[in-house]
Structures are given as structure tokens and as C-alpha cells.
Amino acid sequence: MSLMNGQALFANALSGLQSTYSILAKNSSNSSGITIEDLTNPSTTVLQQLGGNMTFAQFLSSNFAAIDKDGDGTISSDDMSNLTSKLAQNGLSYQELCQLCSSGMANSEMLSNVLTYFNQIDTNKDGRVTNAEIQAFSLKADEEKLKTEYQSFKPSSMSVFYGDSESDSEPSSLIDNLYPQNNS
Image (tube, rainbow, N blue to C red):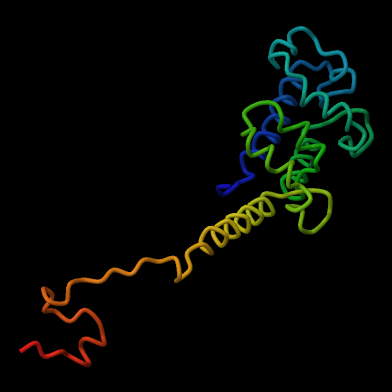
């Protein structure tokens, strides 16, 4: 396993949310943000601009009440900013990783590894993984792999090469220097 860096996963999730919000807000009839109606009944124009990918809109819809902090029925740009800051700082849950990182440009091998080892990566057991936790897990996994590989290199498995002492006039070891042989 090479060093995993969760930045790509987080960047994909956060930029996908921001981009989706921007498209929805631009096409919303509500000037202060997006409503649940904007999310559940997007216009054809919105669907085209999203490329038919409703993953991020579905996330916003299913978490609408939690994102709309003031309860005014609108997700404002401040609400979105708070959401993305919170996700970047606190990390992503298993479900959020599945939903937000499975589409788009996320590295599928990295996502698969993070999902497979989620419980081991989540060292503080808060149900979320951060980029720092992903990197720490990766470093530890690489260290363990190297330890395992290098355990096979024991002194008993190393070859010892001897030269022909007759043709070698140079001392080749500390012992040769301390106890020179007189070949005269």
C-alpha cells in the first residue's frame, strides 16, 4: 500500500457539494439560497448542468434540516460554507464517503482502501475519518509492510564472499590489518 492521502477524497466531496449548490442557487427562484423544492424537483436546465449526476443534490436533500441551521427553509451560502468547513475539519463518516466520494474524480482504489479499513483509520472512534487519520494509517501500514519484508533478511540468509588471499595483497578487514600475514 503506498501512502494514501485523503486530500483528493475530501476535495472531490467538498467541490462537488459547492458546485452543485452553485448550480442550484443560480437556477433557484429563491434569491437567498436553495429550497427543498429546488433539490427534489430540479429543472431540466439544472439536470443538464449537473450532467445528470444528482449525488450531491441528494446528499443536500437528505441532510437539508441539519444544513439549514436557522430553519428558514433555505440553504444559504453561509449554511454551505459552514457545512464544507465542518466536513473538512471533522472528517467524513462511512456513509458520507460512500455517497460523496463514489462519484466524480475520486480515486476508486483509495476510496476502496479507506472504506475497507475505516474502523482502523478512525483512531479517535468518532465515526469519521480525517485526512490526517488517513495519512497516519497509511504511514503505519507502510512501516509494517517494510518490517515484514526486511525480517526475511537475517544474517543467516546473507551470502559471504571470500576472495583469493594469494592474489589479494590489500588488507580487506580489520583483522587483516591487525594481524598481517607474512607471505615471505
